Length: 284
Image 1 (spheres, rainbow, N blue to C red):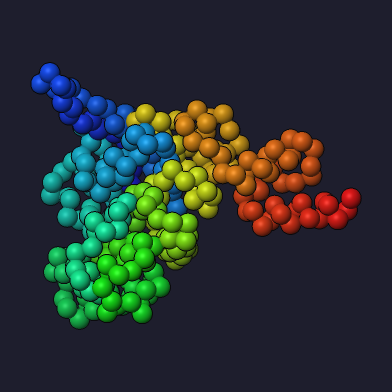
Image 2 (cartoon, helix red, strand yellow):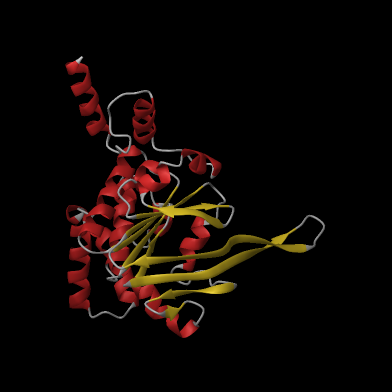
């Protein structure tokens, strides 16, 4: 069952030239794909590829100029559908500081359900549940501004979860975090997906997509490839042509295999690859 369907969708921005004239910039150009309920989809591309614009089209923040985007069969182009669509597609953005709206963590998480007019007793339950999902229950009474970047982003995710969406879209949500912060956010995303939530991860960190069910590669507004992580990463020239790079573990495994080492060329786990090399060295 598809929770989101993107059908020949395009989006363009208005541009302004130095001489006062205007033009258009096509950011998303005739793209089509489907997102199945419960799947983990990674949308990757270089800066300016259109991936963040496309992310905002998934819950109606941007409406397609051509084609359509459907969420549970509802078109994002129809204004009367937007409330229902945004209840079902939660968004978390790049800068965690820009997503904080309250001075106490639990109040920040409660902001979404309060705007949906959820009864107060249920809001309390939702906030407690959402904080538990991101392992931040112990920080409920803290100020979000005193937390680390990774912790802030987990609070932002909790805020999205509190509206009980079907889909969680992480739009470059790890881009401004240190490695530990990225690890924390990805762990939450994987846990939520394992529990049945549909996750859409927008990123340019290729190591982050290794556990995805489907990877969509964008270049200059177009989709240039779709497939499993290994189907994508086995085409190194395609990845590089999209101004990206194969994850280092995958690249090393492929090079070792090509050089005649008996290792799994599709290995994506650094520890597993290291174990394979230790066994080979012991045999020799």
